[in-house]
Image (cartoon, rainbow, N blue to C red; front, side, top):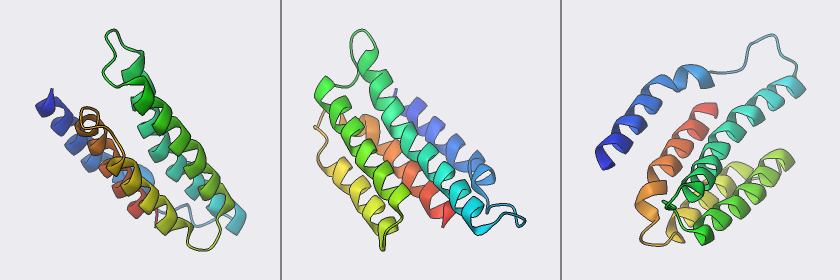
Length: 126
C-alpha cells in the first residue's frame, strides 16, 4: 500500500506541473485570478475527496472524525482562497501544515502524501 502511494505521488508530481502552468497570456486580470483559483481549488479538493472516499469504503480506511476534520478544513481553505486577502497564500500553506499536525496517528500516513502534493501544486501556481 505504501509503495503504491509513493508511486502515485511521484507520478502526479511529475505529470501535474504541466497542468498548472501560468495562465494564458491573453487573460484579463480577473480571468487570471479565476484561473489561479481553479488550479488551487483542484489541489485542495483532492485532499477532501481522498478523505471522503477513504471514509466511504468498507471497512473505512480513514476515520469519520478525520474525514469531517478534512472537510471542515477544506471549506475554510476555499473561503480564504476566494477572499484573496493579504497573506492568503501563507494562510493556506499554514493551514495545510496544521491539518497534517492534527491528524490522528493512524490516518496521518494516508493523507500526508496528498498534503505534500497540494503544497507542491500551490507553489507551482505562484
